[in-house]
Length: 577
Image 1: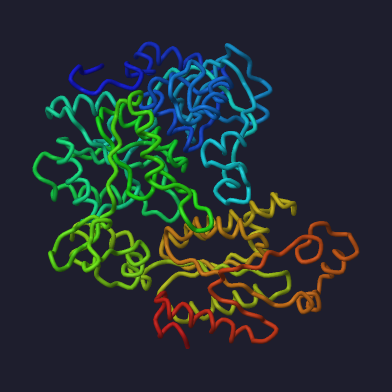
Image 2: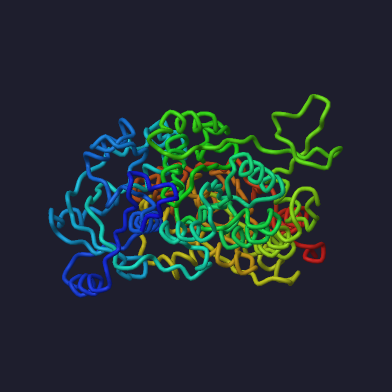
């Protein structure tokens, strides 16, 4: 349903791919005989935007012609502007069985049928070209690119989608409006000019001032349109963020601002993604849009600095403004001018004015230490929600993750630490030793690199759940690879502390302690891919604690870890005896 006084959808007509009631029943009944595909978070997000019209004018997942054209020229094969590929990856086994014209049932992770795809083709996307389009480089030396390439399917299936039911969201249902529903709401409110502020971070006083000023300058109402497709490591979970947005809304002028959630997963594609954000926000009814200052829509980093800046993003959007039909508003971040008790743009302050801000790191440190956030920085309601999610470290769970060679003394050290923590009391403590996990959690796994990595990721998953529940997880695997250790850190840290302990006992000492003869067998070639002999151990470069058990006793090593935990506020002095 189009509303004539609102900004029309991109392409002229808002796509609606949902089957009617009778059609849905027919599709569900027929699907029993079709192959099916369980979708991951990104595919579910893309499907939801396809079915509801957020990706108008797309009517399905892209085929080879559109994929190649989008990667090379930011246009679909028919010439229409489209910045990023929207494809559906499938495994080798399914790719071998699908043929043109066949029906494929698309299901959520629980097996609920969401849609049917009529297969046009199965093809092999050029993932290097896709990485180049997304990130401006296909170099696997950049972690974000390497991670993207490693997780992409070899095959993709293309075809038109017909919706059976949208993905089920049990949270904030009143805020999860489709493009049609949001447009109807704008019409009821009498909104004709709408500034959409797209964000994935918590908003504070500076953001409130920034967005209010921008909306007033545009003569528009404000739509706070946060991305809630999938929580990213290190970010506050979206439940907390949404409650913070709700606490912020009363601080805008009456009837100026509304909140609606955007079920989208950011791809980290810089200027091209800014163009996609423009298309999506136009389809939801916006006439103007903003992204967070300084991000340009990108999360890719190279050498510690953002790979793109907002000026590049604005330039690309401005270049295609006539086609996009939506204006990108760019404003610098605000700083607090204490002498005037107000916020001003950081780039407009005079040399004599001293503006202050609070970094994300300082926010985390203040919350972890139980210290107040500055009154000028945020609103009391927002701070309350953050404190509910981020209690002081003394009440947080944490994971102590020990990594070192076989025979380095990890298990003995882990046992000593476990006893000391239990002696101190206050938290439940779980020991996830390498051999114990192998026996009880990963007994079916072998010792290939793939299986060893999977074993470590399983340990990380369990440790994250223990940490989330406020307990202590002590992990003692070999964990030889930096990338996998980082994945575990990323999984645990959103829920509490992660303390990496490098048990740095030298190889010759470890080999001398070997009562099972494993090192000797490895040197004789009887054991392949043995860490430290025929397979590398990548030493941690950012371990919180380093312990050489050839130089200290297990009790002394455990005490070093306890002292670190005490300094950082995870435990009190009474935990050390």
